[in-house]
Amino acid sequence: MFEVLTDSFKSAINKIRFADDEKSLKKALDTLKRALLKADVHHKVVKDLLKVVEIETKAKGVGQLNFLKALKENLEKILTAPGKQGFVFASTPPTKVLMTGLQGSGKTTTTVKLANYLKLRNKKVLIAACDLQRLAAVEQLKQMCEQNEIDLYFDEEQKEPLKIAKDALKKAKDGLYDVLLVDTAGRLAIDEELMQELKGIKDALEPDEIFYVADSLSGQDAVRSANSFKEKIGITGVILSKYDGDSKGGVALGIAKQVEVPLRFIGTGEKVADLELFVPDRIVNRLMGEGDLETLAEKTAAVIDEKKAKAITKKIKKGEFNFNDFLEQMEQMKKLGSMKSLIGMIPGMSGMANQLKDADLENSEEMKKIKAMISSMTKKEREMPSLLNNTRKRRIAAGAGLSQNEVNRFLKQFKNASKMAKKFSGKKGMQDLQNMLAQAKQGGIPR
Ligand code: GDP
Ligand code: MG
Image 1 (cartoon, helix red, strand yellow):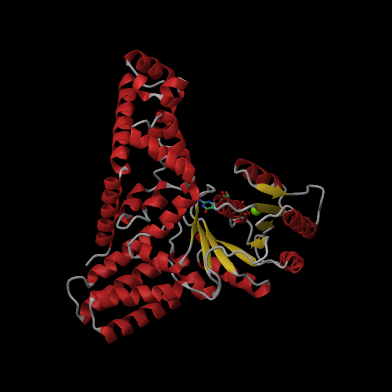
Image 2 (tube, rainbow, N blue to C red):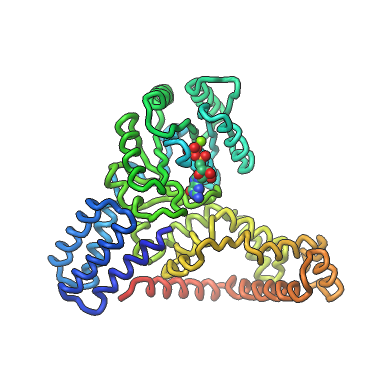
């Protein structure tokens, strides 16, 4: 999600890669300045950042390492605002979260994403449908919650959002929920009526968190409206939505500093899995092209069912990995988010993420064909890939609307993939993988 910014940082760092004199420092700072302003980072934030980086680099001696160190430390400072990081649970459940923002900013979508994020971490989550302004708002939430198996409290007879919030809280307490997320109405612009409605809910609910969902496409306007919400009702966190779109990305760098409220999550797509935790030091690593294995590992751990993972590993080791396992693995992968967002977290791979653009593995033509092929197999064939002789392959090709060549190619790929998996599943395999990652990490920072 930070590919463009990462590229700018890399090219700035490269400016003092081979020559460590003040002239190259100036070049590096200039490159950075241009890139940050172009990415729509607020000019004052840029100015302040570059000034300290320059002073600190010079104090320690102009050179790439000192420059990098000063840049990283000060970027982290800019990204950090007083307050909590990530999602913090209240000491007595349910943790109550009020979701606020302008209309269309992505509140409802983000509420469901957050619920899904918490559900994957084994939390019991209830959403309260308190947007009664837009006709279809409750219906939208109902559908999204149903699709993602998330509990929703709504009352279509009720006209008072405040009453719904209170009833939802009662349900959350009685039902021993861990978290209550309250989706609220937005407006096109900030108006008194909306603020009064939110204040009422806030006073009655005493939320642990008030998140402001800001549309990153609106650039500096997002910062301004976040500031008004902070002033009028008080916010404890910002979530930037639509970071995947044409957003130049800079707003994510400036917002914590400009609003003095921590940025907690970033929305990177329309799907429920497209929500990224925003932790300043990890983000700095990503911006420097060093990847973020911590987040990757955490995501994987949240999504992957350990028991199932063990069972699969066992099968792989025995060479018994079959098509059902394959489909199941694909389902698991889906929960991790887009391929692009994952690749950006691998050290040294941010450039590749940029090239992938919108490559959506799940919906790719290739994957559709593979799924069609597997659907045309009998139960037995899915369990025992070795059964597939020519007659069976012909039948499957006809059933799936594929050519025999395609079927042969997919089967060969599958065979190779199982072989690779088998190779990496042993102790030595893990060692190889770790070595690979360590090497990638070394290559991450240009030296
Ligand atoms: P609300 O009025 O604040 O509740 O906004 P919604 O949640 O209904 O979202 C408005 C539109 O923005 C919908 O079409 C969402 O699919 C879309 N949207 C929300 N978050 C994201 C995001 O992170 N990326 C993209 N591409 N679209 C988003
Ligand atoms: Mg909404």
